[in-house]
Length: 282
Image 1 (cartoon, rainbow, N blue to C red):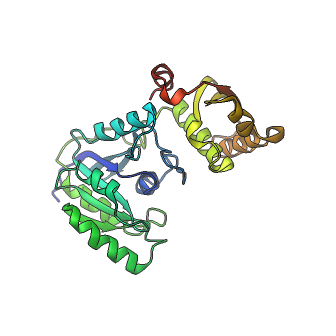
Image 2 (cartoon, rainbow, N blue to C red):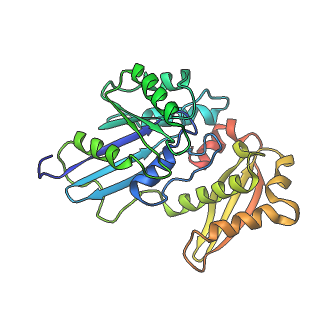
């Protein structure tokens, strides 16, 4: 690599739950994208900025590409597809613990041949599973293949070096010190959703949306939307247990003194109503 400064965009794409968000966080060294075992946890493109001497890579985490069942699902697929436009490096992430399927091939078909393939989850896959997955992934016809563990960081450095080699010469795209461009209110709303998913597990994950409606630091008011009245007591929990636990977890990740108020509201079938999606920024 020459001494000239290099910069550009690398987009992470793949099916739901392959570990794109965990990989982004591992690369930039900070939590910028929420994670959960629940499919479609990522609903917006999340940019994480890695800056090193002579180098800046803007990584874009995208929603998992899937067969949509709602208007929200269709829009998430569009978001992921749009994030590939004009990108310098496309990175397909697949799961080493799952057989290569039609969904992986569908996503791979949308990528340029020069794309990179990442086989993730080395920390939980057996050696033979990883080798079999790498062999299967070779049929996708992409340019390079990297086995990694986003959770432990194994192989991530080699992946970043390969991406850096592909970037054009150019100035930094973000000021020094910037790690993400996600607005703080959006970050807190997503953090609330992440912690609710963690507390409730899979009871009503796809029916939840969160948005910050008031921000007068240290007081933050966050509205939690569900689709049906029957979901409201589940999100609140007996005696408010779910909201209290989620709120405690959120505050633990915010600066000292933060006061987070959580409220639950019913917005019928919000996932399929254009006005509700636009109000939520989807």
